[in-house]
Image (cartoon, rainbow, N blue to C red; front, side):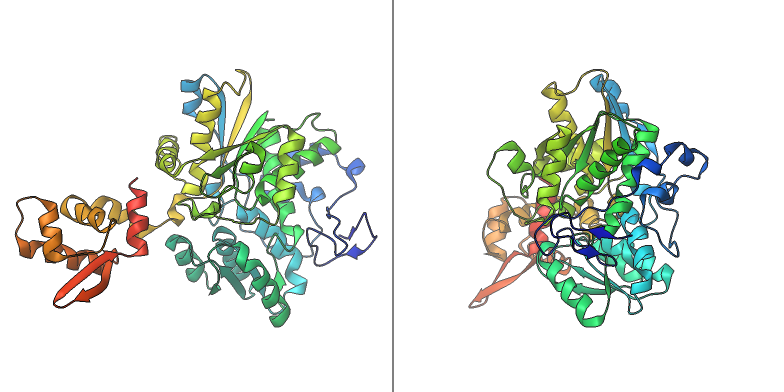
Length: 443
């Protein structure tokens, strides 16, 4: 596979960035006139079912990714709409990123004698850890300091070398590029190498075969999945399988909205969100994502932090445990339905990108085990630092003074509070960052 820049004519082969050195956007294309989609029918489900529209590789490194279930949503009956859920949690490592990594690793294998590297906020890192292990090559993953513990556990268990860098994934992209150059690694970060996105677009092919949707609702952080799905449908149009693109709907958290805010004409925000998988402050692929929304006639939706638990609970009623970054699709759907955005005969696909098993295990346990007096203490300390006797007075409940110190010791051992300072014999306590995040999860 080779890519020639439409602007300056430069030829790219093993490493294909999103943009040429002259500034022109690059795009991987194929001989569309020669492709007959009916050939796909007799092949087993999965990413490599669509090999005519994927980069040519010498060896396929696969864990049987793709071919994920499409479920009719019970919620559709309540809303009077035809709603379907594409459950990407059923991929080998629990996320849609397995589609990207199988293609990126398979293509990059001849160039990865020293291993692979990726900058990721978690899912792609866990996927690379698995596929590199399968290929017998080292994996280096650059992940932000704000990352779910479940994802870190998965990455470590699969044997990747973890480098914590920056607050969000954007900051790790250039670091990964430097690591690739310095150690001779093959960089599969989608913002630096377009090859893997070819694997992600197979989600569009599957949706077409299963549903031929009119609308696709996609959780959006970097914009790479949204753009990949768009490219897949554009190629289906190129080969004559469809005439019109489905409307693509990007969903972002209100706290981090660089793409959606531009579509909606509101002030963008770039703050940490409980939906950490969507915390991308300056997405490199923003313009491509905006193009996908615009050319498909789609839109964007913003979801508040207080709506994430609702989204997770409603997906659980469908039998799917999704991480917060995926759960945003449900409140987005409800908002659009309330605005009468859909027609009764529309076929609406919700893309659940990643499993809830990758989330904050410890904080999930604490959500159920911390209550009563301990919760009251946490809320008091969220306002200001306090010492034991002061807390006891503020609680205003029949409780022995010494019992407050027992609660404080237990909360400290859980990492939810810490000593902030001392005045004489008084020891003042305040919330840790983890304690603040825990309170946020309770709303």
